[in-house]
Length: 492
Image 1 (cartoon, rainbow, N blue to C red):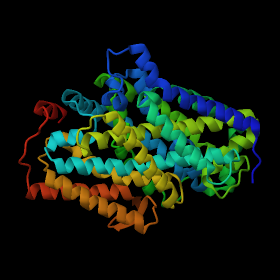
Image 2 (cartoon, rainbow, N blue to C red):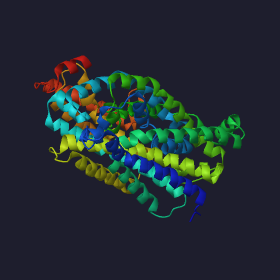
Image 3 (cartoon, rainbow, N blue to C red):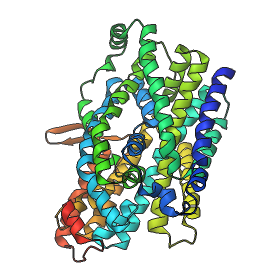
Image 4 (tube, rainbow, N blue to C red):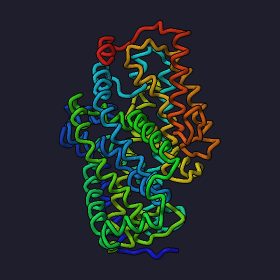
């Protein structure tokens, strides 16, 4: 069993516990400072932060969805194991920002004008279909569980690296996330996103400066990695999965309940546009974080558990107190977005699946807790080879809502029967391929000139859209929108 370093553990506990305490007490502080003029316990306050987040808060909150355990644990682990192929996360974020700039302000205007709080609300307003609303809500609920599971794995990994034994790291990860979300609502991750990003900036900037110094500089680092590991550059046959995974991840990114929650909590459509302009800053740091996978090779880190690559690298290079700080930044970087994910899922349940509640905040808290239990089960029973596969599995699921939410903004006369049929066929097709391929996010395709591994999410989305178009031609839309029709016309 690994020896526990008291300095590393002490620094970790201080920063991790401080973040939880600050986030958990924010609603109590707001009630004291704002008095009774506004009901701080209202569902919109807990689940959407009162729709009052300005450019700075939105920038940290929305950008924080890219700084998760996916970024700091899963991407470097993939780069460490398979090389340059793991860098598909960079073009994916570059693709998604123009998508945010063009599409998300339109969705915000529709939601703001009609009092919508979820994607399922918007889709119900567009297609006037209760069945489609329920299907979309359930899809978002299921899709976010593997993503939260990835965050639990991130927290568990750093606690394991500190030397705590057995199942204790996973128990700590689950309890800390549950307490943080229950007490703070959306204001908790919105406030502590500042803390999280500052901690990660410090850890990454120090890492990309100090670690190359230990390996003889960047020239020596790249020379050693390319000499010992040919996969440091894309290999023949990796171009197709690299490109299609980037595209499918970009299309899925802002369909998740947590990313859309950050958008709908914004103060205005202009706030969203401003953020789309500045969010590429996160991509720069993401590239530097991915480089940690190569740095681990150059530093001589060897492990059969790829998720431990970054924690082991930090512990090997840095003094124990700073290694504890870096591990705390990773844990906080998983805690904050996981809370937004659970809150986004809870919004779907209370707004679209349950009847009106006398105490909607209590119902949302219980729902968020149940969602985290589902994520815990994903950790225990989904035997993914790489942690990142859990996020990509969620992408396959959530992409099936793309036609209803995004194509629903277009002037195409698409019908709710077409959307339901496309969702069903696309979901069965995509999840069937994932099951056959052992949860791998790519599937071999041989069709004419196209031959190679293609993103399973993209394949299932294409099947979905084809079915939507065919069924909509056979059974055209007859019902009218229940929302303000001029908003959907403007969006189109």
